[in-house]
Length: 431
Image: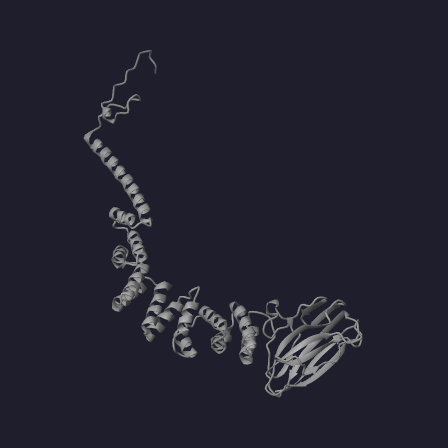
């Protein structure tokens, strides 16, 4: 309660800071407080100096001047990166970086790259025992690809076959993104293809895919087939592109059996929709096919020609002619695997309500690589659905034929205008 009397507060024993004074000593703190303030000032001061010193050393170490790097090492001799920088400059000057690399390895013993550099430097100097020890140590401190790949190279250069195969396989066991370098080195070893597959290629599907693609790119057809045989019993969707490529490459190399195996593995798996091929019995040629397989392997190949449009769909083939097509044109075709001397029959139904009798369009069977038909159907020209049977016999030595729908304008006739539809197309082959 305010009684009207003035109230005076007692001054505290410890002097308060004045708003008009910034002198810490005016506050006269206790000796303990003064010591704490001094320690904090020294701590922050030393930390700031340390940051400045470190930044300055890093700028020196980034220099291309060897003297600057030496200065950086005097400021921070405990930094392994600075020793590696010194090693780089020594390499550039064609001087041995061994001492600098050893310092870096002592400061950071788990850096595999430093041990690899030490090993390669020792190899250059002819100290093979030390080189091997350093490279093996790199592989112990790191399970990454680079130490294993470096050891495979080292043992290849040293001619140590058993150790080479060991480390090549361990390298591929990691499924490296770019494995072709390992495959190439394996093929430089004087061993047959089956030994490479057995000793270097791990049983990993991703590696099999990469190895098969490598072999196809090198036109090593039979070894590629051996790899694919391991994959065909259980085809996965990820195998689709490889099997399509393999089918094409095998057919181009006249390896019909391999092409058939790859194609049937593809069609029998979960990758795409397509018809398997058989060398006897019936073979439907009008079944549904995924867009992905068209123009590959044993699927239909369409040929783009002006004025002609073809449509492939389940159960039928439709072709439209504008009247402005070329004088002759191959419209679509597909491979048919056969046996030498085998007999067969091509069967189909067709309707072409707009064509004149000499339409110039028919189905033809040709031996692979030949331009002369072995068998040709009559001209396809009938407004009613018409069934056709075309018997044929495979010549001796032929194991692959081509079935094609072909157009050639006949003398005295006009170009075709209208449509053709073919259904129930199949080929029957005797055993």
